[in-house]
Length: 99
Length: 384
Ligand code: SF4
Figure 1: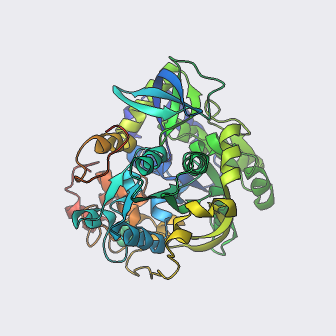
Figure 2 (figure 1 turned 60 degrees about the horizontal axis):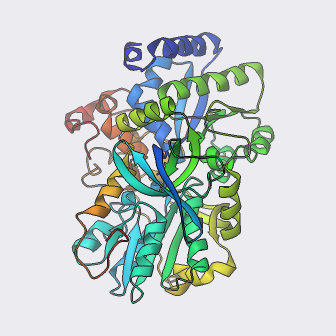
Figure 3 (figure 1 turned 135 degrees about the vertical axis):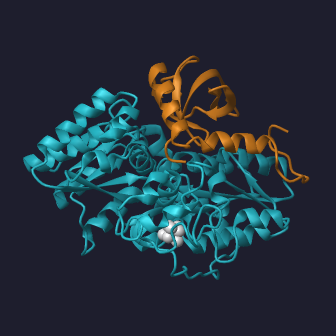
């Protein structure tokens, strides 16, 4: 939860006034809020993302190294949360935004 | 120094280790604050390679671990209510409450959803106007900007069926509490790099000078930690007590300004209970009064829920660095990741989980009686 995961910003857009984008985390893509880095990023940049929010920028080499370090430490739990949202949840009337 | 070969950059690691050992005129006691750093330290065997030049004691930087039992019980109570969809980060699900955990509530039919971002919970609320969506807003300064934004947007987009159960804590007051405790042994800190990415390090400057402790903002990778230790040792040897930044590639002195801005608009400082530690004044973030309509504690009247922490679990001593996990009598016996007694055994940032995952520590002589528990060390390292 505290370390954040580096990913590559592949798309940027606004949703109801909030800067958002799509970030690729080692092959897993997720919508991420870019409000806290909006002034300094462009597609192709790498950012450290904490629970769905990009907080700081890193370069590509740093991003890849950090990702590997997190993997070795079993600290990629946020990626597990992403997959949990997509599957395995109990059936119910409610739907996540992804449908 | 047999483990040094495992480092990604063994030469740099070796030269840092050599410098730390050569420059330490006595054994210094440092605390690493962040649970991610604890995992690196335990995994890489850093205490072993440093020998007696530096003793590392593990700090309280595991947000899951310090969330008070009472707050977990409130989460469980909410998750059981039929009108509620309870949402949380994934690592809260297995944290034991007084009776059970969120996972068990879900198995019994309570609607508990893991979300990746608090904005997912907000969207869930907009998609389900007939349900109450509660989000468990936990964490240190690293998750505060995300949780603050969810509440900010709930007001902006007028989403009345969304609320947050807040259990936010902040790092500097915990460091102060450790320094002010009568049995404190900490002579220097490795501050948590990712917390400082958000907040910067201005808040640490008065702490360093008032208590005369070096504070080095440090990353979580092995070489980061060795460099942070070396910088702290150099300060101690030279009689300095300053804030230095090892993690310059990510941290700026004033942190992330827009993130800090939203955090301070949505949250205010409150006294907060830390699991196993007790109340620390002005150590938490609570919602400002103008956000009361989105405060689950107000909406659902949770004030009556009180809990007493089990005595067997020594999480408080572990989180304050008073004991190493292997010194807890329950470690590896009554308490394992499968049957955890306390949060430090289930959280990926918890010290007990780190000692359990990296099996060689279960058999070291770092604590009395640890060797006799080696028989229990058959689990796969890092197995979930
Ligand atoms: S080993 Fe288990 S019981 Fe002991 S302090 Fe850690 S979490 Fe608590």
